[in-house]
Image (cartoon, rainbow, N blue to C red):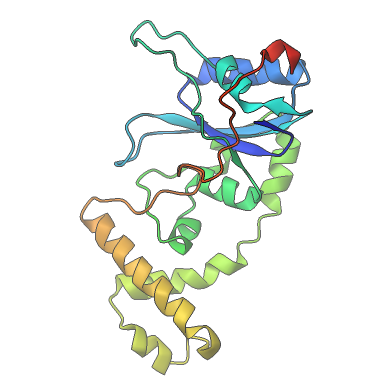
Length: 219
């Protein structure tokens, strides 16, 4: 499918090859910018990979992009490339916080990841724009979850938090749901398991890729 929206994906390319192809997309004015981060495979993942997000300069076909990233690997029968699951990225905050595997963000989603990253690990074709996007992230909504996680880790019963007046009555059900999700995530962590995958890793219900690719030179 052709799109001009900000889209994200996962690549299994080597980082050197991937960055060279991003530079080529920029030089050919096919994309305006791109951010990416290299992730080690977690327990529920088979391979190291690269999460990336990009903004097309003009309407392009995602199937052509997948062909563009194909990298011959002498050690494998199939070439390395990105997945066919292109997804629209409506929130840069969400993408950046997951790219970092930010603990507060993951906690808010009831997720767990063994590996965590620094802001400096996230790369971009426009470093100033990347820093600006990071600076604009509003973390206030995640701070309240820190003490909720502490309570879950210390096994403080939820009704005790309510009795202490720490839970807004109007939002009791939402906080209780989050408390239970945290409890499960913490138990999974202790057992060496992982939580749910992020939306960036789930198959899209409305994939943007097309089964009929057009020549990339015509994009």
